[in-house]
Image (tube, rainbow, N blue to C red; front, side, top):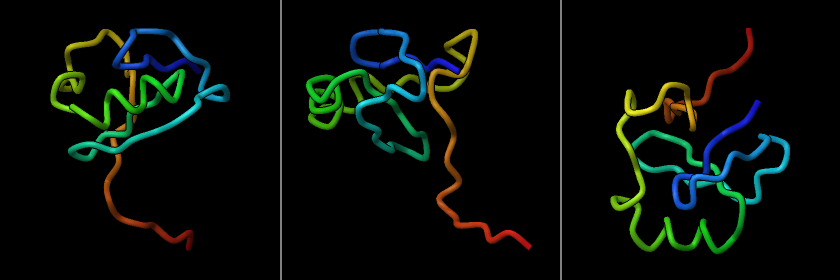
Length: 69
């Protein structure tokens, strides 16, 4: 599975993600520490609302922990 770095637009295999950040309940993935830092400095600049992409570039997080039953 690939994800899109919201800062530079690079397609990154999920296993090769360098960093991750959560913003407004969404998990964003990054190809480099530089892109991660830029996002952290101004997440509103790079965060896109769901539906702007033809596929999921990031994953929605619930903010809750679920235990397996």
